[in-house]
Image 1 (cartoon, rainbow, N blue to C red):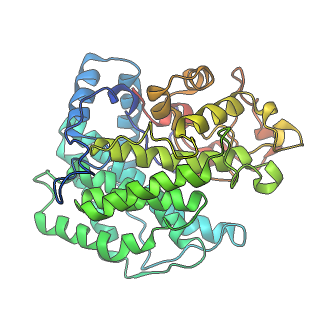
Image 2 (tube, rainbow, N blue to C red; image 1 turned 90 degrees about the horizontal axis):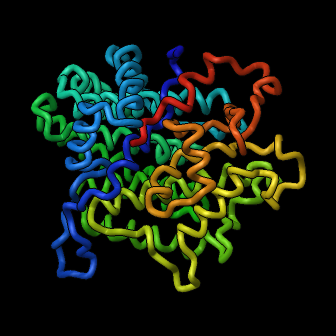
Length: 399
């Protein structure tokens, strides 16, 4: 296995599926009297961490293999990482300045992924060296970013990548290694700089990613009003984004349908992550049904079949080999634990553990498994193994 600088992508789904049956520590109190709700954890609860530690100790699969890879990558690439923090946060539009877009965005992506991976290693191993390295990255973003632009792709990129930093901070907040005054500074950063960057008001996938940032902030800050606002917004997305047959009208026709599956994934993945955060904090949204009868399950079953057999995708009239982002389905690990689906199960078994990469010009990553693409890199000769980084099939550990 070759390790590189294009490491792990978002790591957002690490270790979720083995823990979905754990009891919640907070009950759904959204209909109770004021201030009866308190946040439990942001994304991974203490009880899940305890379960993961036991599984790693027992070498239970696939948890053990996934963690072994994560651990090695953290040791090789992250422990001595120098944070890449801009003084001014600004990301140009990808389709106008791809190089400039990537330069700024990738710094946050890689720093957030590194902090999250290090925090997970700390919680699983109890080795403080991982906590110290993660805290160094987090503190750098809090102290060195002076200005936040909200134009072009600045808000979307921040909404997409910063939540992993919040997941990391949440895993570290009880650590004696992270001084309380620094934790307070991080909370202030969330309130004054991070939250204003959210895109939750948008109606397409931008809105879903903004929701992830907002609900992550709400739970970290123990903000009941903001949390309830996020729950309401989550339900509105189900109402307005999903059609009766499960397709996403705002996304399926992107680029004439060529990126329709990919953009549907880009909408459903954050919707799934937000639902998981809500569930960890006592509100189970997975079985929510809109007044029109639309559900997240409907969308999952529809996109799972298209992902397994892209030739059946009706919104693209060209060759199936020209479709982009078909394999962006690592979030199926969460959904398939709620509603087992044959197509999703087949895809996950052939590719886990996976990453959650967001790069239009690095997708598709290609595979030769049944129902998936052959290696298409021959059509993208400028792509190298160094650019692709750690293979997607080992980057996110799902138990």
